[in-house]
Structures are given as structure tokens and as C-alpha cells.
Image 1 (tube, each protein chain N blue to C red):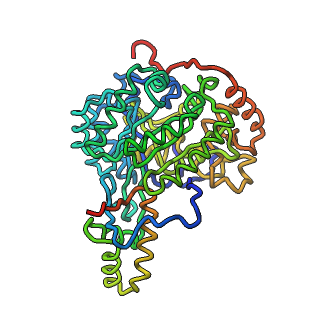
Image 2 (image 1 turned 30 degrees about the vertical axis):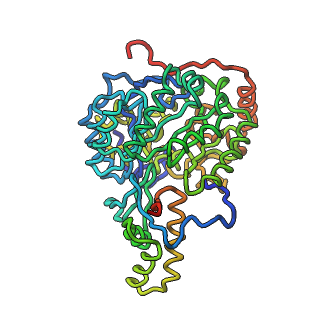
Image 3 (image 1 turned 90 degrees about the vertical axis):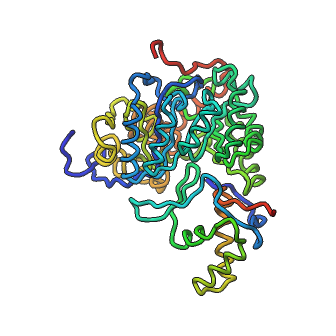
Length: 105
Length: 377
């Protein structure tokens, strides 16, 4: 069940934010189905290769902008497109409390 | 075991079992609380019939091999078992994600640290009400509120992710905003607001628990507003009062499709209330492997797919959305587990169901029939 959210909700994430997987959320193998999954409280999310590639970058040290730059270089894709995909994918996970952002030190 | 050429539903139509994602392990029915809507069956399993930890370890291994990714270790109160940490560790060793579903009563700080070392991934804490007077009366356990709040502090100190499970009904639904605020204050990542499901113990307490239509409507508004306010900070999962809904809930996401329950004595059920269907026979992990039960048992295959459905479900475009609703509710309200869930507005019994719900909601009953084991438990 999804809440009826405003059509243009405020952005939850900015280029300088550092995303990470909090305690209780981890990448895992689903050996039976032969896929990777994101294990989280009372929820296991099946990941496609793109989702898995993004989440594998969350090391708790690099910012959104930094990760987008690295992914763009690795996959030889336009950086602004990667940054948008990254932001949209992680926004969904932040809304589900599966990805946290580091407090600015 | 009967000799089947292939898995088939209750009418003999071929069905194709999928793979389960989640398993509820109700490792005991013992519980210090006596909530009048307990989801355990009215016939509770006694301690001496409980599956030993070694058997649970085998079952977790079989579950992981079958495709299960997450186990919800629940009860009764799972902390009533002294070997809880051993059971948790064996689930983690099998590769499962471990959710601990607890009342928080009877687990000391030292034990919670032991459960952390054993590998509990996430804690779900039940909430019966707001403040001691309400929570202690509903749970039938004086002192439960103070113990629970203390437990919630330990959960935060150790750092477990926390979900608050607030079970709501007529006698506490007006305090929903306070329950959401409490979950926020406790640092919960999620609150699950679940309206009482009227099976078993709750069925016995309908006149004391049934929400009014107005309460259900206000609760929806409270949830919607809180979701906007708390976006990115706390998730609110909401199970509405289905007696006041237009369509039934998609119970278990479809019978035998993604989840299974194993009871304290090893009985395997398609859902926790399935034993309320009197003619249905259930297998036990002491006799057959979990995989064999999942794929071959009559109980799991009975309502798989959509071919078993009668009208109005058969020609309904929602039949793969809500799967005809809840089989146990069909049993309880229509006297027939195969019927369309009578809470559905398309059911011929819908008018009666609504009238009865409104009569129960209008009843001024306060007193509960508490969940108790008969003596000797």
C-alpha cells in the first residue's frame, strides 16, 4: 500500500549526501533463484543488475556526486543520466528506510 | 500420502507451486500477555509438544533450500523459550534473515545482547496501547507498558532496527496519532498499524474490538497525513479494517504462494489461522520435509491458482489481485472456505457482514475474553 504523496515531493537526497546501507540492510545471494537481493527488515527485494551495481557502490564514504562520476566512467554513460537514475532509485529506498544518509560531519 | 500425478487444487485442477519467500516460525504459544485478539489458535499448543531447537535448525535449512529468504521468529512470546538464541543462530547459519517478533516482556538486557550475538537482524515490538493504564488492560498484564518501554530503550542502545507493531481496534484506535508519535520517539524505522483480524480469539471479542466506520475513516486520514509528514523518516504500513472495505485483503498474497507458517509443534500451515478450517488436514515437519509439504500437501495446494474459485470471483477482474480474499474469513463468515470472502462488496453476504460489524461496533462492550491456556499449559 503506498501513501498518496504530493505530486512533486521535496527531494530527499542531494549530490553531496553520502548514502549507506544501515544496520539490518544487506546485499545477499538468493541461491535458489540465482539472483541478488537486498535483505531488509521484513522485506527482501529482488535486484536487477543495475540495482545491484548501484547498491554495491554504497561504501559510506563517497557522496552521490562521486558515485555518479565513478559509475559514469565505468559504464561509459552520460554522468547526468546516471546521477538521475541513482537519485531516483535511492529516493525510493530512502522512503522505505532501506538506505540512510550520513549526517554531515 | 495419496498418490498424485501432479499437484492439484481442491477441485482436481492442476496447480503450479511457486517458491516461498518468508516463513513465520511460531516457536511457542507460551506468552506472558493475554491479548484478546491473539493470532494464535484458540487451541494452544503446550510446552511439552514444542519442537526442539535441533528440529528448528533442520527446518531452517530446508526452508532456505526451498527459497525462503526471511524468517519471522514469533510465538506466543519467543522469549519464553530458553533456547531462543540457539534457534536464532541456527536460522542465521542457514542463511536466513532473522526478524524477531516480540512483546518485549521477559527478555532481559543481557539476553537481548545474547540475541544480538546470535544474529537477530531486526526487532519488531508489539504495542497494545498508549500509556500503562490502556496497554496493561488490553494485554492483561500489569506492568507490561513499563517493561516494554524499557525493552525499546535497550533495542535502541544495541542498535537493532526497530519496527513497532500497533494492533488497533475500537478501544485504542482513537489514540493512533499518539502511537505513531511514540514509534517516532522510540526511533522506529517502521510502524505497522494493523487492525485486528477477526479470527480465533478476536472472533470471541468482536463486540469489544470491532472499530466503528467513523474510526476506520479517521484512521485512514491519520495514516495518510503521517505518511506525508514522515516521508524518509519512518515508514507506515497499514492494514485497514476490512469489514469496512470495498474489497477484501489479499491474504498471504495468495494462498500457498509466497509464505508459510510453522507452528510450535511443527505443524505447517498456509497461514496462521488456517486451522480454523475444520476439514483441512495439515502436515508436520516431524513427518515430511518442508519441501514435500510445500509442493505436495493437499492443504497448500487446495486454494492455489484461481481455477477453484466460484462466482462472483471466477469472472472478477480482481481475482489475481486479492485472490478471493481470506479463506479463513470465508470459513468464519460464510461457513464455507471456498466462498468469496464475505467482506467483499461483491459477495452476496456482504450486507449481512456489514450489518453485523456495525452492530458489534455499536455495542458498548468493554470487557475482554483474554487469551489463556486452559490449565495444565
